[in-house]
Image (cartoon, rainbow, N blue to C red; front, side, top):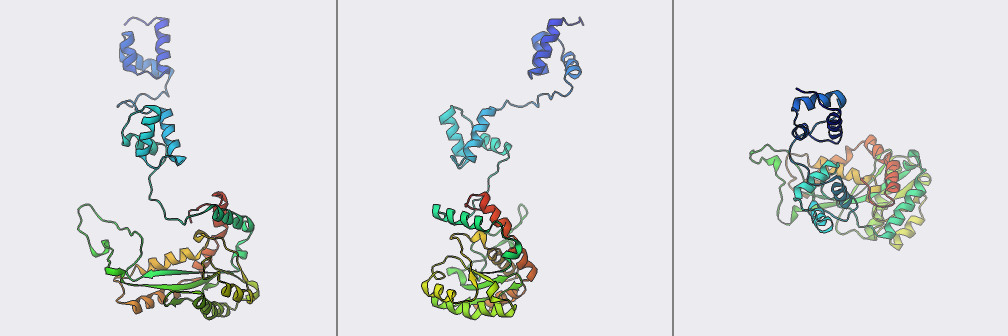
Length: 338
């Protein structure tokens, strides 16, 4: 083979640097592909060759447009992004091409979580609460008695349940969430937790109003304080902003007590560690082999699982408060991952 001229050699180097394929350069200059390959190996040993396949339909700028549409919230789905591409940039691609570009950028589709609606007033209150308490230590948070109410269904959670199953496998009893007409009934409970362990818990009969709530505080909050031999003057009581909690009769009663009440921001279940304890309690109730035969058996199970909650589990939840506060500050008062 005749040696290549200096101009041809330099031109080949220039085309290789620009990313042209060995085949295209060989055809253009009438030389063998093996010759071009040797030149590339000599001068560009780290140059990655073409992976083959079809050329990408989206340029880097188009991909950046897709990512920006999703991350800014202007478009909610890949289909909406595809329509925006076509309308704004006259780029026509399939929905899958857009989804692939989003996955390539590290994005993935997830199910939307249910979160409380936050008004601008709620966001401001949450942010102010976080700023006031950002310097609190874990020992400060351990002075609080955390309280809340929850509903427990006889036939499991209101939410979605998941299970593992093989392809083609017929459904087994543990693959099914059993339901009955009218829901099968449920029990409302009130409970509280402390850094020394779970407090007293009670069943709420009927619809709880301010009068029933006052009896609960008298009959279950004070016994909790007494049980753990806590100094009432050094503890802080937490409750959410439900209307029955903020009723005038309740506020007057709380003002007469030796303990302080934590000023709580509305719409903030993610800040209350007892919310995670409810989830843990319901998980344990779902582990039974069969649903309870009635409300009495359900209540017996609730009491048994509540009494099995350990001091360490309560402490672990309460000790998450500095991280919860940091999360609210980071989100500027909006939703967190808790």
